[in-house]
Amino acid sequence: MAEMKKIAVFVSGGGTNLQALIDAEKVGGLGNGKITLVVASKPGVYALERAAQNGIASVVLPRREYDSIAAYSKVLADTCVEAGIDLIVLAGFLTIFDEQVYEKFPNRILNVHPALIPSFCGKGYYGLHVHEAALEKGVKVSGATVHIVTPECDAGPIVLQKAVDVLDDDTPETLQKRIMEQAEWKILPEAVRLFCDDKLTVVNNKVYKKGE
Picture 1 (cartoon, rainbow, N blue to C red):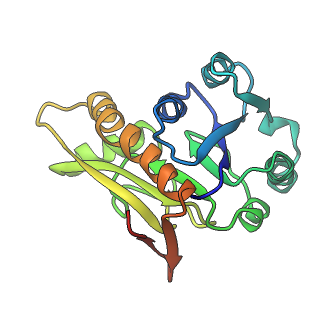
Picture 2: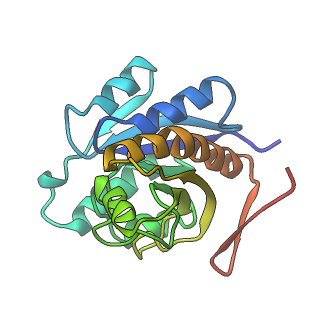
């Protein structure tokens, strides 16, 4: 039995993916993982309310209060180290950080991206921009990807992916909602569970699942 792992969830907005993780934890869906800290990049976001309602400690670290990415990254890394965090999950965290965080948490940062990487990912592909691009291209399936975060945007090893059909009458908003409900909210908690139960191993930039 793996020992309990402490999870920090980084947020910048409403926290719908945070809620999916909280809901999963309540039914044992995070395995040996427990969300012990929510880190917000701005005050007053609804994700902080979700943390409070569920008795999860939170800290607000506004990017604008630090004069450089380096200074900001140091505070993020130090905060998580001091809290004994084992895994960082980016749940709509829209602020850049540097190698100080990666060095302290190598292969221990997960992100969910609302497309099937390597499609529609990288710089500029976030939020509705991803779905606008998918619809413009006329793809028949899109979906979500959970990957390990590395310094290169959306390029880290892929943990899980789930495809979602694109409908002829989709708008960016309807596609975004379907991908969240059918893919993101399912594979993000599952990836966290696999990590926290020591079921993942990374070799040559690829993730392998150990026997379930």
